[in-house]
Amino acid sequence: MGGSSTAGISGAWPRDAAPRALAWQVPDPRRMLQLGLAAAWLFDAVLQFQPFMFSSGFANQMIASTAPGNPSVVAHGILWSAREIAAHSSLANASFCTIQLLLALGIAWRPTVKAALAASVVWSLGVWWIGEGLGEVLTGTASPLTGAPGAVIIYALLAVLLWPHEGELRSGDFVAARPLGVLPARLVWLTLWASLAALALQPANRGAGDLAVRIRVMAMGEPHWLGALERSAAGLVAGRGLETSVAFAVVLGLIAVGVFGPPRVVRIVVGAAIVVAAAIWVVGEGFGGVFAGPATDPNSGAPLILLALAYWPLSRIGVAAVAGGDVGAAAPARLLGAAGPGDGAGSVGMGEGFLGSTGSGA
Image (tube, rainbow, N blue to C red; front, side):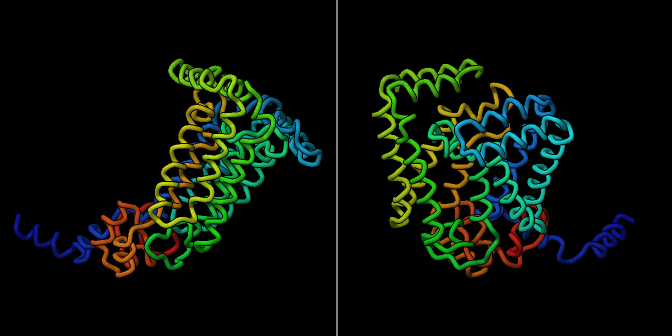
């Protein structure tokens, strides 16, 4: 009886079931970054579910506060939206939560990734205006140390740079080059980091105590360990606002132009960008203030790290393995940050909707 049962099970099991299961592999670098963007939207949705966000205080205290200092056309749009949201606070915030949750799920699910990425660009631009006051970049007081140009505009850039497109890659190219091409992607990087350098040099950031005050303000309400770290950083730059701003701008400027170097140099530059973004996120932004009270996103430091990873140059071995269609060879290469045309074409199996690399769509 045991033998006939085993035979029956063996006969009923699809012959290619084992190969299909074994065909699943770690998502390629672009897919991993897309999932990182999906996680960012999911985290934003979770933060939006905080009770305070369902009150009129969210509109009156958080949204309306981004209007001062902006041009009148920008400020009027923010204030009008704040009034409307405050009048229907519960319904409005429930809508915001739902939209961000759907964006996260849409980017994570391969069949809807293109539609979700496109929708995320539109939503990001709206939030950047109404919710972040264009990152305060037009107010003359914005600082990259405390969140400029805003998290959601970086989300929008990521959606464009991670757009599913099977553009050809060569050794030394990077994920962000696939939809736009190498030169346009480098120009996006140059524009972003050069803008951060320019913001660091604004008069409002060059005063002797300006940076120290900004950091101390961010430390308010933080857990003791994080507040102590931020207050120590504030003490280091106290009275050295001009010198610190100039040095910060020089570092950001070098990062901006460094992407045009050879792959070995670009890896150093991208690594430096990740370190700088992490320092901004921890010291200047206090992890987006998520430990201090109501926050709507992790601020700009975290998405800057994600964006920098999209510019990490790929290895020759990884590109050749993927281009040659050798799934077994491509999988470990992907773990080292390699991708190429095809992205695992032909592989199917477990998790292909959300995680698996099939070479189509994402």
